[in-house]
Length: 165
Image (cartoon, rainbow, N blue to C red; front, side):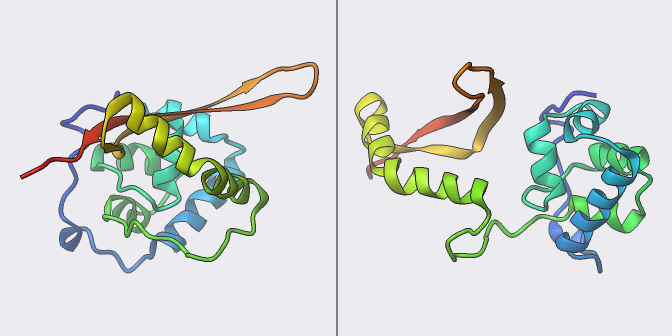
């Protein structure tokens, strides 16, 4: 099943409240992933959705529509509580401390060093506005290079111009 507007509908959070936290949900998913020897790509392929989005939902940063949550939980042998927690709307917040994980820190560093430059170039090319993180996709690729393999991050977000009134 591919992800469409119809399959992306979820019920309000008050109808999907769960005694299981997003953190407990993530722990259960990761334990099943490790136990079955799966990759995030294999899980995403099985349920018919993108690997970045599926991984983000499994880490509690996005809610998963019921048809996809049903497929994921059946594939991994997870409980109805995990299914309900997957469907619950997440809080889009995170710790404000400087990240300690080296990969996450480097992304934080990139935004710190190049954030103003990225903003300036977006404004020059598009005008005054922002890049959506809602109408958004991301891909991570590996580029082989004799000097050392390269990580290729591609972020694709809809431009949202600021309005005047």
